[in-house]
Length: 215
Image (cartoon, rainbow, N blue to C red; front, side):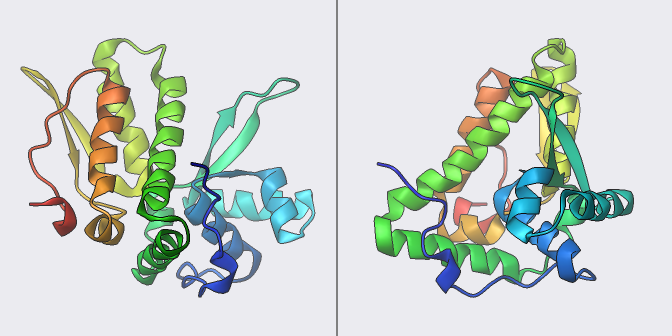
């Protein structure tokens, strides 16, 4: 089964913008929130702004601590900068944004079936797993846990890592997808598979935040 990135989204209400940001910077934050990441060129095309104008807005948002970037290798030339929200950037969005994402997923369920919506959620973890593999593959095993926690923290999970006798303990103090998880508890199973993959070992979940995933 193939899925499109949220079919029919243009017909649904737009989410509230990030607190304190309007105009092009607000649009940039909304797109990064919805997509997980984008290059300068992609943002320039979507916003209809020049590359220089987008670079200016990105630098301002980076200085505020709302966004950061990863260097993504490409075939020719220097690596591309893929911009994404930091934990502070995620915090700029009111709770209604999560409700809008649930509405979008419900639209996918109605048009393509529940499995199509779940597949979209799983693709987000697939992209994050690929990124973590790239960033941590050269690290010694004892440093991987802390590196993974730093990336998850930047994604809004407020994650911390502590060494333990049986490996380590990853604690997520925030669930950035709580409302989604309450309607689609499959996202919790997808996250558990994602963690097992990036750690390269079985994981045991001791507690959950989202009511839809248990307690």
